[in-house]
Image 1 (cartoon, rainbow, N blue to C red):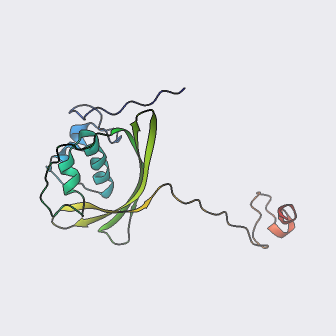
Image 2: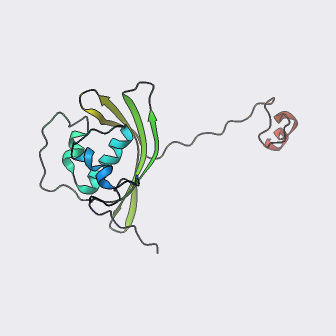
Image 3: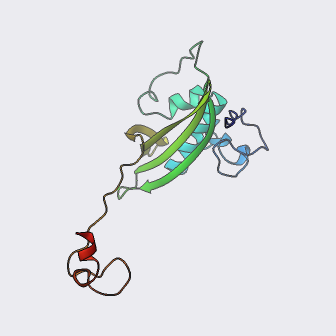
Length: 174
């Protein structure tokens, strides 16, 4: 039986940041969580939101989400404690519009006897006054598999022979 990864401890100054950037917490997510400075990119905001989950900084999660940012934060007495273990950023896709960006990520957590993953492609918008903000999930779950493109008869064969597909592997595909 494999051993489950341990939940990350609360982030500490001088220690590696929970977001997995390789930087120390005080140079990475702490200034964003403490509102010393806004996140420079959508990916940086995503990393700070993960670290906020680890630190149980629900006020940062509240103010960095478009659905609640304009409302006053009210602390709930029994916020759920989840044992987050790691974050993987798969892609950060800036959009043609400079104030729109997408981040695809997997956030792992442990609960009871299993490790689970939350996979999402998230949308972020930048507002001139407040900086980047999480707006919505575009997709939850893994990215859809891409279908293989079948070569045309006159395309070069994908086997690397240098011949046209119709004179090479087309008969093997039938």
